[in-house]
Amino acid sequence: MVAIIEKRQLRDFDWLTAVLAVAIVAFGVWQIYNAQPSETYWSKQILGLGIALAAMLVVAVSDYRRIVDAAPVFYALGIILLILVLIPGLGVKINGQRAWLAVPFIGRFQPSEFVKIPVVLMLAKYFGNRKPGPLRFREMFVGGLILALPLVLILMEPDAGQAITYFPLLAVVLFLSAVRMRYVVLAIIATLIFVPTAYIVGVNTGFIKNYQRERIEAILDPENADPRGFGYHTHQSMITVGKGGLTGIKGNQEISQSVLKFLPEPHTDFIFAVTAENTGFVGCISLLLAYALLISRLVAGAREAPDRIGMLVIMSIAGGMVFQIFINVGMVLGFLPVIGVPLPLMSAGLSAVLSTFIAIGFVISVKMRRFVN
Image (cartoon, rainbow, N blue to C red):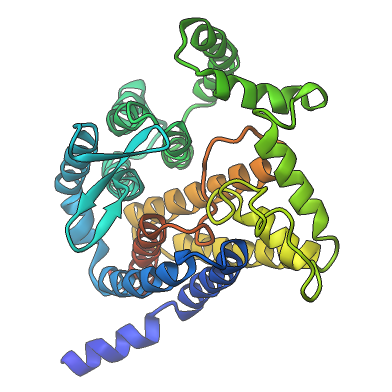
């Protein structure tokens, strides 16, 4: 019986999705090495990939429905981790953000990356078990509460870049749960009013720091942005992208932006700029096509899901990934403010790679059970 189960698992395992994810990480390791050849970020990323693959396999062979049933437990544990991060002496503060926990023999990890998964599972559990029909306001309110608690704790770190990546998780679930059009219109109107109002209030009260304000203004008015001030990140990123040309730099030509450290955080937030510099337009388009193929595999898995919960899990994961890609690439190309959103599977960071592969493990778990009632 065990042999039969193993054969079915091997037959139904979505190898293409796993291979695509590994290929993108491998391409990212190459770019991380190009960005920081004298550092160990690239070797740590390889180690992280090995751990992430093991975690993905464990999740993939597990029944996602049983894990979703335990979603409240995982959600509560995630909230506890986010609270621990905020406690001085427990949370590790880097670049003004207390967003990491130090674990003996493991090192630092970022709970806000992992809490996305319990949030997805909680939303799928709640909205997947509701009765058919248009969403009621009470249901939308509960969904907002599920998202709000971790969101507030992450903003207290403060990590606005990480916090913003949580919004598409709820937005996708609401859209697929037959949200009424009038609520969508009201949400758009409220956003158009709230965002500029919050920006003005945030600037006047000091909640939005001067460097954050100047980075936003560097996008809104790039001609007047100081390339040596808070417009520096965007300015250097755009130079780096343009330097790559069609196929990237050649031979031993100096990489002025990344190797000479003109480009800030080249191995994390600006890894797409490094990719453009080293592989050019061709490499960037190839990477985006790989992402498109990966996302299409996720969407195909959602269409084959055996139940609504599985579909919501996959689509929420896919929506979050698309959003992060859009924000990071837009930031690198100078269309969006620099807010510190990593590029999925490409940016250096063990927490991000591990959480992404766990999410992919859920996708594969759903697809492996598409013929099960």
